[in-house]
Length: 260
Ligand code: BJW
Ligand code: ZN
Image (tube, rainbow, N blue to C red):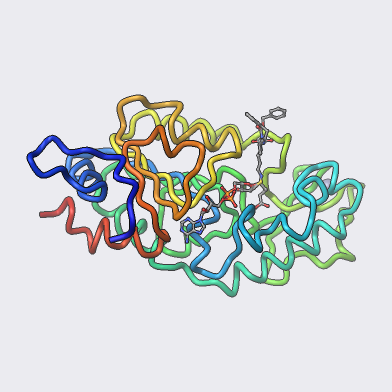
């Protein structure tokens, strides 16, 4: 099992390990909520945002992921998203995505809220997925309600202008923009009713998504799965330090935890 911080303590003579505490919590859970970030896709070969070699290392955030950056240089922004779209298409869901998809079958109420725009949870077979920051499956017009699907090549840069006078932009949420209202509402409700919350592969610094981990539910058993500590590590019941693709399948091998 992955290295742990030992943040959980058991009440038995032999204290349970953090992973064992999580498994006990899952056995008793009716409702599970999972918040994921780019770290869950790291083992699919997709870079994280803020890590070494992460996406922000080569460009400033404001240039790439803000309405202002898009307004000033839409070709640069689309070039970046087209590269990412091609990488998403080439990537495969990893063992972490697959473990979560399998876990969904074992609970009546199981929700993944992902900050990722790579569609890998859906491709892994997860069904109840809330995409907090949108997706790269579609572009939408900045001016009218038009939408268009994006194929593996993304959007050709000579087609950025829409006939209405607006521009095609990725269907994602940039800094300073609100999250889709219905998606956010469902995510808050799912977090609030959960018995177990798993926080996987996110630095938990981008709000309001990060608030789903700890702000809406004071009674849930919250476990963080991340090789590195984050600002929420000291506030969760259990920290499992390791790559999601290694840790998740070992927490929940083949649905055995709740089906026995
Ligand atoms: C592994 C691993 C492995 C590595 N296994 N783990 C409250 C307080 C402070 C600020 C704000 C606030 N409320 C709003 C704000 C402003 C802003 C914000 O949060 N800023 C902070 C950064 C300071 N938020 C917003 O603007 C949001 N909108 C909003 O609040 O609207 C209301 C509003 C509107 C108008 C005015 C005022 C309020 C929108 C946020 C949109 C974020 N968009 C981005 C880019 C677009 C999508 C895209 O292009 O993909 O979304 S930013 C970027 O960060 C992206 C990600 O989804 C998001 C989260 O990053 P993530 O996934 O956590 O990545 P990393 O790299 O940070 O972390 C990776 C982690 O994985 C690390 O911990 C690793 O250790 C770990 N890891 N390998 C498991 N194998
Ligand atoms: Zn338009």
